[in-house]
Amino acid sequence: MDAVTEQRVVIVGAGLAGAGTAARLREQGFDGKIALVGAEPHRPYDRPPLSKDLLLGKAESADLDFDFAALGVDLLLGRAATGVLTGERVLNTDAGPLPYDHLVLATGAEPVTLPGTGALPGVHVLRTLADARRLKPVLDARGSVVAVGAGWIGAEVATAARLAGCRVTVVEAAHQPLAGVLPAEVGAPMRRWYADAGAELRTGHPVTAVRDGEVELADGTVLGADAVLVGIGSRPATGWLRDSGIPLEPDGSVRADAGLRTGVPGVYAVGDCASFPSARYGRRLLVHHWDNALTGPSTVAAGILGGTAAHDPVPYFWSEQFGRYVQYAGYHEPADALVRRGDPAGGDAAWSVCWLREGVLRALLTVDRPRDLAQGRRLIERATPLDPERVADPSVPLKAAAR
Image (spheres, rainbow, N blue to C red):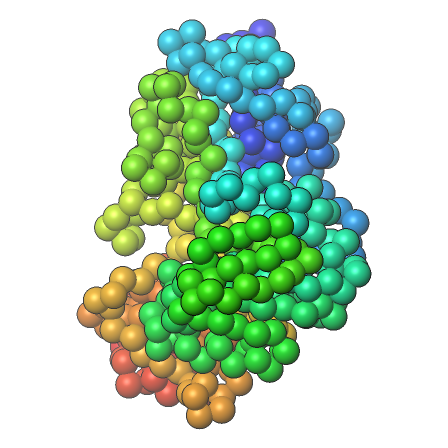
């Protein structure tokens, strides 16, 4: 046997990033042992359908399309990682230790919860298959739903619940939807989406208490519900690494370099649990989106096989909200110039917003304008200078705005 054949890669986290790393390793010629460790008992599955098809009963599962037996990957499911002995190259789990030559951290993210709500049966989060299966009976029964947080998850669950015929109220501490990711003037037109769909949106109302079956707001209002969905964000699932010596950022993400190496010999990090330096944007990025988990594994596989690759994608995300297809690509900052394509306040159903810096497209949000997204994404990748006046004309294809 040669040295590579004798090597063992242990991947912690059986989601898209972890499963994708196993597949990319085989595709790139790794013929050693691969073990994929997952805390959940289920076969690796995709997460986007959880807030869409699975909640509405349009699909029974969301299994990832990988043949692990054909890939020669050992699935170790229902097995939670508890720590890493980096000097000995051993992963500790609740079912015993696993030695490794290369360790890939792909444990993803976990939902932020409200204090004291973990044991309440009527309070839900939505991150796992088990979460979706717990919430689905409420939608099947057309029960009432209160969603805390008008972010991506809150909007998607509200969409599914309304389609199921549920009474839906969404409460948000900020004064517009998606306040954490979009400026007020961009998020404001989305308010109408809730009303048009028959969902009540209450913004500027912080939650002061959540009890089983009810939510209390700062103004004293108490909202009853068959289910309370808490959708107030997520954080890297890295608490189990705090005493390992593997570097973590203040936000809890594993600090990786451009090759997704952690700086600890033989240890890589990929997907929602990892932050990486972006040369494109000149800062470290933590991206909790599907596309990042899809693209990162190729970089990790190249590194394990002794090659060099850099992970610096244009971040991309999509969401289905109240019959609209919302897509976002790139990364914007407050100082970037905002340019509108279309006027939602004037009745345009499809519209886009672009963020430019010195005439170069940095990010864009599109609502039912897929061509803008496809062209804009390529323009961001190439850092193509644009004419802002032509960008602002929705009848002009974005690619035609290039200088």
